[in-house]
Image (cartoon, rainbow, N blue to C red; front, side, top):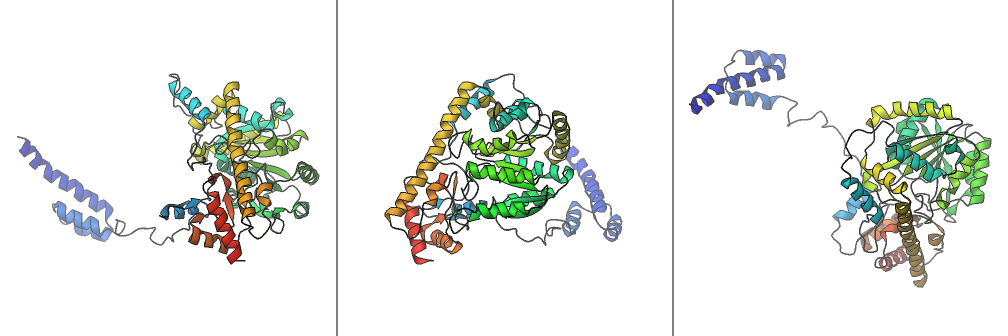
Length: 460
């Protein structure tokens, strides 16, 4: 009897398909279709193929192809290059001496502890994220003895790494702060202007880098911040400025602080490299702590991508230092209203890794040792590259390579020289001449030095 059941089901299936066709087709075609409700499945299929929103066409057919991200596009081009000597110095991710990604031993241990814990569940976090992570993150950047923490004046929420922290902070300011102008350094990380513009702020720049000295244009910085609108937001890189690697001295930071407080400018710090720049967590947080110590308000975006190697976990925090504890409570309540419709709540895994390490003194100490190891290797790469260029008697002053700090070096190479190095030496970097020192090794430095020497010799 099974064959009879199959035969009996066929007319019913045809009727359902015909009904579907009548609902999908325009009214004129629908009228024609209703005159033959017993049409075959093949006829129905033919009608469906003719419907204009099927695969043969698209409401998005007029879209232009978007350009590659200028930073991530470097890796796309690198991956397509079959050359065995190619070197990728574009994206800011740490690599070992062997050119491999690194997962810290302490991160693996923390992760294993989490996996082995049978009581761990996969429930949603609160909108603000993991409470331990938030408290420990604020303590890490502001200091255990920070008066702002002791007085409960800090509102901290877990966000999607540094980018998410900046975006949440930007949208919060666009909704609740009286001045919507944000001043960002020129140059800065390429995503900064996009993040803040889409958050609803008006972006303007202030002078920061001096191409002539390949150092800080401190006078230009003071002049531009001095002429900024009263109350404007100012984006500050806490340490290891991206892309230049040029940081103010502590004396210069103090002058910046005094100027900003005198004009009621609101600091918004971006800290992507705490501990990764100098090798010291406290030293890399000095600029931030100077601003907190004066009792004023500020915003702080933190990322654990670089200093814990948690790039793909997207772990970050936004902290807002407020004037009083009751204001901090209200600020947190409004941050929830920004986050809820954006991504509802943050992921649990990466934040749990961070919290596990930060709250255990032995694991914390192990992390600081591994962190210093990464920082020291980058400092060593700077010295080796400088020495290699000096040995080749490459034209120009290359001392900025060892004066700059952090993951990136702003080489001073122009776009033509960068293109030449890609074409002739298969070395990939952003067109502004920024290179990731973390992508270098003792094996690749001679090749890079040869390429730089040829570029500056042949192309002025």
